[in-house]
Length: 298
Figure 1: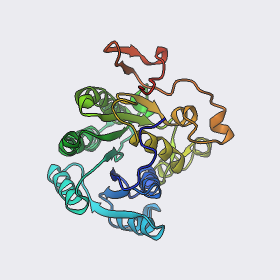
Figure 2: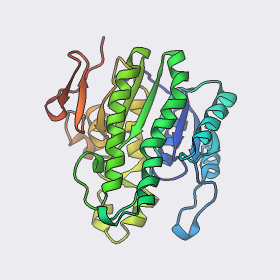
Figure 3: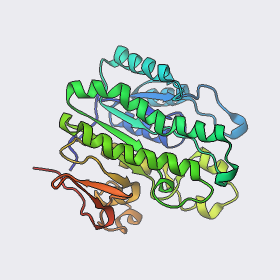
């Protein structure tokens, strides 16, 4: 059982929230009554790419449904912009409770064909952006001795991903950053976890990349479904569930977050995925596939 039964009135910052998986998460948090900060660099539509949503349209949609949200144009490559975001959140809501590091960019090509500037771009947004968000928001959570950080990974970061070397490396870095950060802030009752989709997520960007592969698209997870896992992780604290690398569908199935047959049919196998998990009782890293799911402490 999650520590928080509801996220009502909690302040949640979601990066990359104007489109794709982040948009689904922002709307899901708002439906739970959270005060959502829609942070993204996208403040203008891109009809040429069939991408019409922006930070403003997402906030408008949330408000139309009775939710609370504010937009913030954010370039994760600029540390000063993240500081401005933190100041805006504190000015508007006075605190923060959940940070969702969802924003990411990718570049697909054989390793020897990846331009150096593309490598730098992916690394500056994905692991560096995640680090900077944590660096500047964690003091708030540490002071109040509560909160949750949800980082987003990818199957590409947890196994071979041909033609995705730079993206794979960036997501693997986020996985291991999550494990170390969780250990560092556990004494402050802050949960830090990392979730990857079990396969692909049905987003505008993915449809652009795989428009000629309908079989792949048919297997993708709806972003609203993926958001169920993110919300569950956002409700955790350091005593219930922290320092774990999980896959969305398995977590959703195990904790009964979706009752549809396709989820129920997955059974109750451990939802932990990725290279390592921390065994807090023995303080040892253990092989994930041999590890039992961590249970909430009484």
